[in-house]
Image (cartoon, rainbow, N blue to C red; front, side):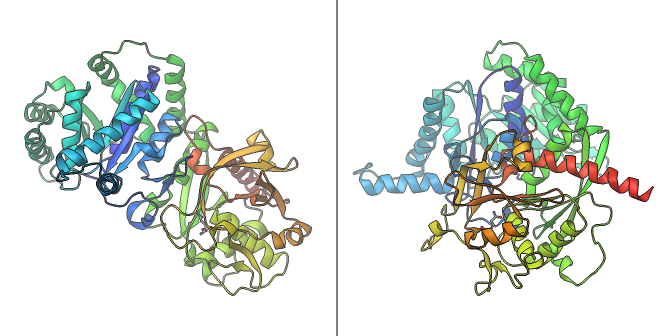
Length: 527
Ligand code: GLN
């Protein structure tokens, strides 16, 4: 079922193979009939993840990249919508002339050929296919059939991720749901080679032997996936059970462990678990009820923290709560404030007030996409005295349209895949903090937006002290802005989408460094 952590398991398999210098690629199958995730509500489905190539994909791709440090591509995301769409357009072109078009073989063959195309183009050593959903669902049934057939043509291992709930009353790990699952799986013609079992507590002997028996495998092929302190620990947890060696043997692989990669991962995990320092960061958002909608931001903070031996404690602040008048500093005890991306009017006035308080109290501030647009609006209103300044997304009639629709967006009505998306290069100015943090005057980051900074106000805000720290290469679009008096950086891009445990995003690292020194300076004041 969803929520078990299939994404983290897939990513841990990718990472284990990477520790042995094998090139593994993930493919994700999602049963829904949306073409991609671009039009889904983050409140229901979690964050929409964007790849370099402009694809808007399931948030699991974020987990894959954060573990594997690969830049993935949209062809690795196979949705029900893509499959049906492709079969139907082939039918219209007459590619199946004379035939009745059916789920088997047409749809299943389409799935198999999409997988084979990835193999042909990229030549990985292994492809790890994550089948979303639950065995027995209608949504993924044709995909389970496709992978069964795939195994007839290509060397294939099946790994089943199951779940053993612990019942408080009897204090026992139950395998009944898993047993029912195996009945369905075996009926579909698939026998697992390995079983990975999610559970709260370590898997006990009785549960293990039941799982093995019902799944038709030996007990040493049952792998424990009980709760770890951090998701990044899972590859190590698997390796403690020799899952790496068992997997390599099953694949017929013989390379040796790359100790350097393995040790560096292990020490990052150690710093996440037992950091020397800590900072408190407030995230002002409107989806704070569902933390999954900010998954990448959360993880980028973990990565930056791990690289600085600092634990980052996140305080979720519902921005609409800040809309009420208050003269006191509502960020007492926080060492940094972050405004992430977002769409729609709700909560934006609270975010603007929050940014104002951060600026006035010199609390480090990081703004991402919407967080940059509102940083510009706040500056316009409160420093440049452009009263009522706003983005036309929130106030179409505003007198000062500091943020307005991108020229390239005018006239676009269709909603799927039409924003300014994907990787764009940006030139950073020499005197900026951003330039120092990136260690280069070019930053390449991913984007997902329809609105932009209105150049009509650029001179005016610059004259009032706002630093335009980066623009697109042609100089036309403002991409980074900064405050000069204290640490405040915001970007139109989403640097959180390119942050990995092994390569933290430069702006996040700078932000956590600033939060640490802000914390020290506050301590001195109170001492
Ligand atoms: N809503 C804003 C826009 O479309 C910001 C988007 C975002 O934060 N991803 O430009």
